[in-house]
Amino acid sequence: MKQRNSLLSAALIALTSLALSSAASAAPARFMAMGTSVKAPLGHIQFCEENRTACRGKNGTPVVVKLTEQRWQELIDLNDRINRAIRPVTDEVLFGKLEYWTYPNGGAGDCEEYVLEKQRALIAAGWPRSALLITVAKDIKNAGHAVLTVRTDQGDMILDNQIEAVLPWYSTPYRYIKRQSTEHPAKWTGIADTRVATVGSVGN
Figure 1 (cartoon, rainbow, N blue to C red):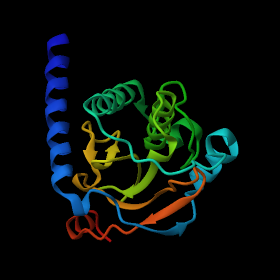
Figure 2: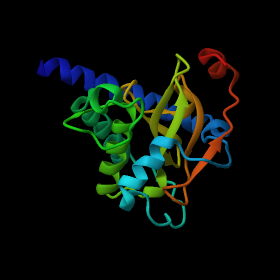
Figure 3: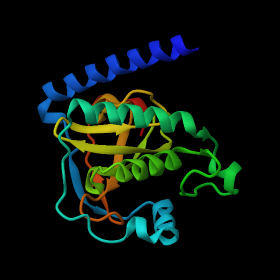
């Protein structure tokens, strides 16, 4: 088992390093094209009402993190650790509701719980809040999905519970809809994701 984990870690590092190189060479598409202010998801509004300190106050000047080798490895390790620590369970099973955003409950949760925990852990590790943005997308089944966007000088990187690797946003099979504002954690901004291949893969 130990050998298998070592091989998996090596493969993951190689894959994510390749993705990082791709991001650096694709300058025009490294960052999501942001639109105008939009309404926050209902689940995030509910989360903010119940966790006011997590949504209070401006972020200050938006920060783009310099993605050193150490910080890149930190993203990979944290994403992997939290993905392994949380069991995928739907809100309906856990809370009796179709949609409910909260921190992981007893080591279980759906995509929003993974995202909230990753964001909380990175902030606790000293990463700037303005660079850690909850993002809503449509997945390959055209279902709603949440991931964490990390804004770096190499582009927007995605921490996800459905894909093991940390990837540039444009290398994921999702159509991005909106994400938290860089300026305030309770506000959201629309995303102009017009990539033909991605839109076609998830339907209308």
